[in-house]
Amino acid sequence: MDAIDPTYFVEMLEDVKGAPVDLLLETTGGFTDAAERVVSILEQMAPDLRVVVAGSAKSNGTVLCLVGKTIVMGASSELGPIEPQLSQVPCTILAMPDFEKQNYILHHLAKYALEQTKKLATRLLRNGMKKDAPDDKIEELVRKLSTRETYFSHGSVIDHVEATALGLKVEYLPPDSELWQLFRLLACMYEADSRQNRYLKIFEGNRLSSAIEVPPVPAPAPT
Image (tube, rainbow, N blue to C red; front, side, top):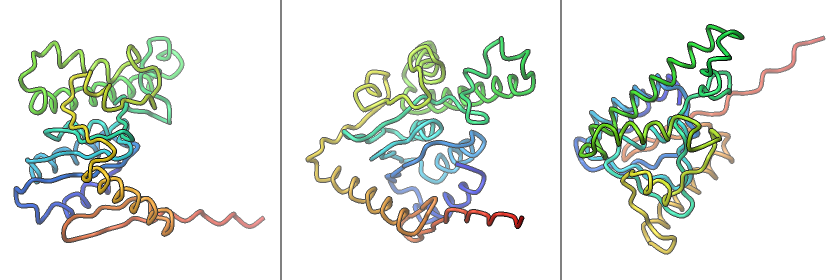
């Protein structure tokens, strides 16, 4: 996710008009600033939302899942820890006290990025799928998702069993479910289109379909 995504989300949702929405989400994450803006758009334009994860929604993709009333998952679905990264290094590492002496600025940027993500996740859980839970349970869930106390890798897999055990509202669809097979087919078609046409991202709703191509590789400078 980056700064251009909110515009495409608005276009994708313009004709929803309060109707129930299934958001099929496939993402490795991205910038928390962009995630915050997408969250705001989803809250305003798709208040009756289920998030469907046919493959993976990692990092800030998992944060986006918290906007939904439920998360639809199957055997192939995975969420992940929500800690952000800076310069491809997890913020939990950069925020360690010993790193402050090595790079004061990056250390504090990492601390602020972690707090930003934790604040967003806490608000979404408190107002959404965990609104009936006490604050200490919500804080415990956010801590598990955003630190290395429970998941030791930024890419750790949180499947539907683990997500349910954490207390997230998960709607599990078995592999032989007709609806799940349709979700998987659609996800596979998007992946095939992306590979064939070198698409980096696809945004598709009832009315519009937009694709962003992979940026071309710059030609080498003449020697």
